[in-house]
Image (cartoon, rainbow, N blue to C red; front, side, top):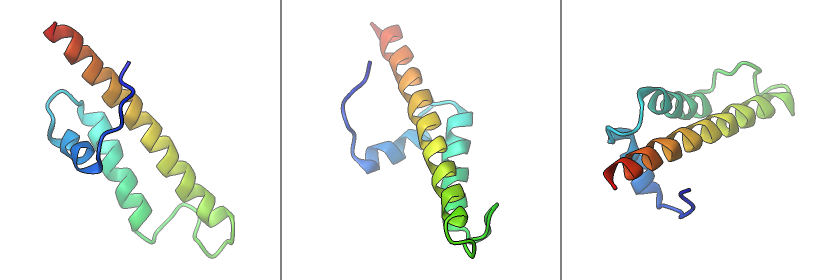
Length: 81
């Protein structure tokens, strides 16, 4: 299990790592785009619901990417041993 924290610039470098699969890369990029682009599933004019969908998309995406990257890096490190 990988438990150490890595700096954001190293996390960004994982986008170019061949050990990390394309689905995790695509989800990470789409989550960033969704958080930045003003068009949402629920517009921000609805006071709480407009922010909740942004938070849920980002949190779900981060959890998926972290789990996927952790598993990919653990598999590659155990294969190297």
